[in-house]
Structure formats: structure tokens, C-alpha cells
Image 1 (cartoon, rainbow, N blue to C red):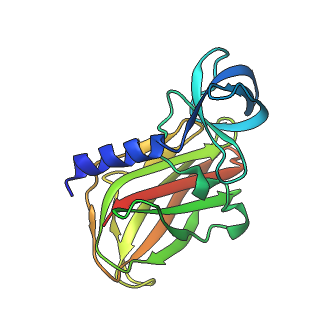
Image 2 (tube, rainbow, N blue to C red; image 1 turned 135 degrees about the horizontal axis):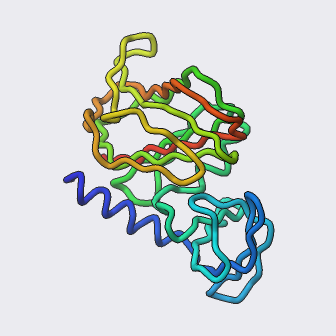
Image 3 (cartoon, rainbow, N blue to C red; image 1 turned 180 degrees about the horizontal axis):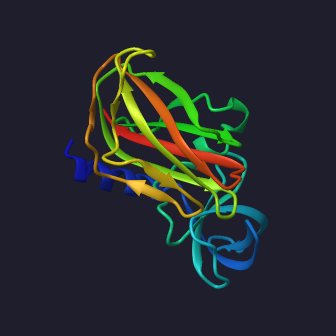
Length: 210
């Protein structure tokens, strides 16, 4: 599958999981929205992306049981099913096969991130990287990272991103890579090279085609 087609497919399929809503209040790291489908009011929700503006349209995903708002300017191709359920994993990523046979997603959600690494899963088949999305929770905080492909957990890896990505409160995304074809049997390895401020959590999701 061509990289451009994969990115388009990821975005299209992810949007199908989102419920449109309008912002009715915004305070700090939380906001309140009214669903456009049934008028239900949801309050005190965490959001990802730029700060929501009252009256603007956003997207809500609450299939995981915890409603999360994606602001209209944010990249909504990230699956919150991974983001909301990983806090207790302490950085250990979980492989999730979506309902769409051509996609795989891998996520880390790391509370109070520090410079270091988190070993990811071993890939059971060839993967083609479609996008990498990241953000932090914490005003003014950033986390600088790259993701490596490794033949073994302790081997020297190959960076997937062209340049290190700097995650912040606004969703950051990459769809162009120096290494976009991952071999069967290789390992994902999250390498955090810098942390500034005091982030409450760091979330990164890798979406691939197979």
C-alpha cells in the first residue's frame, strides 16, 4: 500500500470513530461540549490539540469508556482507545489490531516521562509506517523522541523519523520517514532524548499498514 494512500485510509477510518460536538466551555486542560448527534452535554473532559474555543466544532471519542475531545484543528487520526487505557501500563506498549484488516496501531502512554527508553513489541509481520502522532499533557511541557527499529532489544537501532519529534500540548504528527518499512521479527524501541517543563503524561501512537 502506498504511503499516501495509507495516510488517507488511516484518517478516514479514524474519523468514523469520532462524534461531532460543539464547545460550550473551556477551562485549563478541560472543556465541556454538547454532542451534535443527540444534544447530550459532556463536562470536564480532557482534550488533545489546540485549546478549544467556545462555539467551535470538535470531535469526541468515548468508546473506551472515558470521553476524550479532539479539537477541530488537531490531527484526529490518533485512536484514543490506546491513549486512555495505557496510564497503568507505565510505558509498556500494547499491540492492538483494529477492526480494519490492513492497519495496526501501537501506543505508549507514559506518566511523568523522563529521558530514557521504552521497549515496544516484536513485529509478527512486515509493517509499513503510515504516521506517528504524539502529545503531552502539561502546560508548556515538551518531550523530544524518536522511535527505532531494532533487530534485537539490545542491538543498535535505526531511527524511523527523519528528525526527532517534539511532542507538546498540540498534537504533533509525521507522515514522512527515513525508515518506513519494518521487517518481520524486528522490535519497536521508543527513545526519549529530552524532556522540558513538567509533563503529566506523554502519549505517542504509531499507525502502520500490513
